[in-house]
Amino acid sequence: MDFKYDVIVIGAGHAGNEAACAAANMGSKTLLITMDMNKIGQMSCNPAVGGIAKGQIVREIDALGGQMGIITDRSAIQFRMLNRSKGPAMWSPRSQSDRHQFIQEWIQTVSNTPNLYIWQDTVKQLIIEDKTVTGVITALGVQMSAKSVVLTAGTFLSGLLHIGKNQLSGGRIAEPASFGLTEQLRLVGFTTDRMKTGTPCRIDGKTIDFSKTAEQIGDNDFHKFSFLEEEDRKLAQRSCWITYTNESTHDALRTGLIDSPLYNGQIKSIGPRYCPSIETKIVTFADKTSHQLFLEPEGVNSQEYYLNGFSSSLPLDVQIKAIHTIPGLENAQLYRPGYAIEYDFFDPTQLKHTLETKLIRNLFFAGQVNGTTGYEEAAGQGLIAGINAHINCHGGSEFVLARNEAYIGVLIDDLVTKGVDEPYRMFTSRAEYRLILRQDDADMRLTEKGDSIGLAKENRINQLKSKKEEQKNLIDFIQNYSIKPAHINSFLASNDSAELRHGCKLSDLILRPQFGLNELATAIPALQEKIGKINSRREEIVESVEVLLKYEGYIEREKLIAEKLQRLEHVLLKGRIDYSEIQSLSTEARQKLIKIDPETIGQASRIPGISPSDVNVLLVLLGR
Image 1 (cartoon, rainbow, N blue to C red):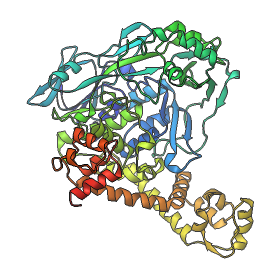
Image 2 (image 1 turned 120 degrees about the vertical axis):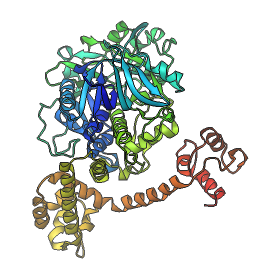
Image 3 (image 1 turned 135 degrees about the vertical axis):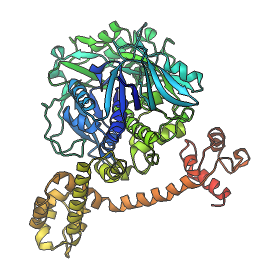
Image 4 (image 1 turned 90 degrees about the horizontal axis):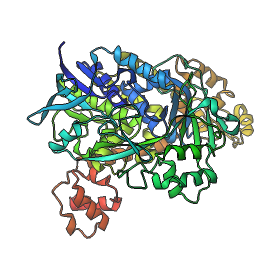
């Protein structure tokens, strides 16, 4: 057996799978190393993909030619478009997945990807020569060579599980941790630290009284994650269910705080503020008498339910006592308790924007080893790392996405520019250009980029061309079609919209908030006919055209701002100013600039605590 590869990917989680598939699909001979071939793409925490801002990342992965969107659609048991009551910049797709089907889809994908091979083993050591990685050594003693290596070990590096005072070594419950890599990388100069995350208990659905909970039904429309045309959802759709904690729940939880690893000093690492454990919630928000919880199904043929919102590392008896006070869960039986996990990560400021490390050439980090949390953030990093690992093997320009091009660009820039002091999660608020980074236009932004590097295949390009043409035809029609008051006023009046006194273009009516294109089409036969002639992806195209027309002014303004600020990325700053001497800068700005010493004005502008006025001061000092 030949153990020589272009790219070796360590870990078959969400980051590793995307990295391996990207490198292989671009033409690299790629090896994916995993501890367990039966758990490729395992959903370690909740059985869902997407959500606020995360859903945008998944659509970007798909637009570039990645796999997560396709696999999520094929394993979906509920789909919802979140934030529909807000503007389109905030719309975020989210899908519940059948956990087992999700794994099976990933196994099928990686097993049948050309150039991609799988090896079941654990990597104990990297082979590093002259500050360049050249291969790996596994627990079985196998030495494998590679031109590039992508490390995506997730929570497995020195993983330690906590359930009350009990501590278990592991990367996930019932799965072993990995040792050796952190120690080796620390010796060659990498800065490492520990982070913590947690997961709730899993409950037997047969023991849940759903009559005491509120049903949450998914959407039944055209929305999906993948831009490729797929069949309708294959699996039966399942509901989620909502319930709440109460004062009795909180009293039961308080009895266990003395044994909580978070409060007795057993856990010393930092957990995520935005997704706190239930014990953290009752301490931080002591005045709240209840917290919302979601019972999320794990699959079509499974009775396993995930209790979203009840992450905990409290002792088992305390968890059970508290759960039995929650409406609908009075007689709940657990499959397994919630637990916290501590693991090693590497300071992401040690990476380039390609996710190659600065210390070791051809070594890439992606996923939770960079201090992030979430399947989507990991997959986005894995895709970029896999692309650049292939480029390092075969030549070409590095592949980097800017902040105004993708949420993935925001994610990676935040990591390598600011570092992390808690597990990083993507939010729409982190993206300053979120109106031009919408989920509906990820293909318009990124598919041609994916094509330029050989990742997005011909079918994606053909669909993009078709979509652009259909969009243009519909927009041209709307902008040029004239409407008379007599033909539309009754419709306007019925929708509480001001009647016309004079004729106008159809595009003027689209700007009104009371209705959309589909509603207008019921009153305008010519528009109905035009929409009816769209050959495929009709609903998607109509929605995208409506967004483009209704928000055209805002979108164009944001594009101009993005282009203006992008110029700041080319204004060099490092070593040109003694910040301590500039009294016109705020005190916080001086301290942050001295500490980080940014390369460019653009990078400086993104440091927390640097205001627009501070940036203007720097520009004046540079003669700009």
